[in-house]
Image (cartoon, rainbow, N blue to C red; front, side, top):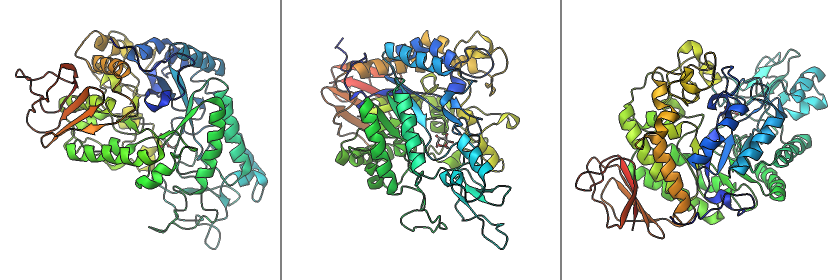
Length: 538
Ligand code: GLC
């Protein structure tokens, strides 16, 4: 076997992030160490050997800080405290160090757009009243209308419903998400200072990177004007002021050798790439690929566009098939319409899980063969489908804010199955976990899949191992090869070819020396069946 081309031990190259495989942990649903029904840091620590064996380079934790959990932790009340439901700061420090000793780096989530309404700053702002310096750290305004009874502007919420809430003294405050997530005023120096201090706090505890939540939203037009379709600049999306903020963050990260990944949803690729200039963010999520239907032409275009938009700024692309906000991959790919947007999260959309799983396996090999870094969302390696959550158990505010029409995001946040023969599929709880696991969940359990060479887990383990050992994989050039309609074929130099068949008929394989890995069995005559991918040594 070739020597690993990436050294995951402490002191290894600074550019580890250019081709890292990063595993997203949603702590509440990963593993329950104390049996109370909620995942926690003790649960994660116990599973670190599993993550090391899976072969990931880093773990990204969605927010683990003190939070009333009005939006799954994206409502932070204190960045310097771990939520007691998850554990303690001491445990987090131990976890970061233990992971590092296994070659796994830690990435934490920072949510600059807003804080929790329970954050001391917001409580102080409410108590201090109109006109106070405490209110200036947020966006408080008098209302419109004769008695101030109308919201200060007409901005639509990211989660449906109004973006303004009126407080007792008559003023209104802005929240692009739920009322429990008041937006911060990024024109205020204290807001900037505090966030840089929070970054340092976590970098000093050994964190190697930060995921920036809703990274294109924090800056607002100070006049808070009404939204006018097509007017440039937008009053709160992708404003130029952000770049100066992230350049300043970059200096903090550079001082600690840490990196950023921005959650930047922007349709304009030129505007997107501006966040990735060499003195700004190292990487940003690429949602074009995630949102792409299972269609060879569309996928190839998404890949080409992504590589082309990153090239001028020299940043590596990131690839991601799912996360805690979107419908799980096998469910999405099993639908007649495989496109994704929030609107496709609907109750009872029919899906063919066998088809979806076959495609998700092929998509895994496609994704892991692309140049750049890749993000896996917990349970993706187990091939978990989106779960149907009984209405009375739904917790996601997105559901409630939609008036009950949108099922919300709980279906991809169900506690993981670890041990087929244990209660609650080995999640670790002594009582019903915080979200119910659907019937048949234990069939997906990690222990069962570990023993089955044909399982999704075995596929991911092998693919991640090859991705580490094959010098052609990870960062570097990609060259498309001629292929029949509906078939994607590309070379990763030196000597590795990936072929994905999305055509409705089997495809002949190009000349090769060896088959390294397939997402499913080849035809008896060596052809590549539909919805199957292969890595070839050439
Ligand atoms: C991001 C998070 C999402 C959260 C929202 C508000 O999109 O991924 O889970 O609800 O920001 O913070």
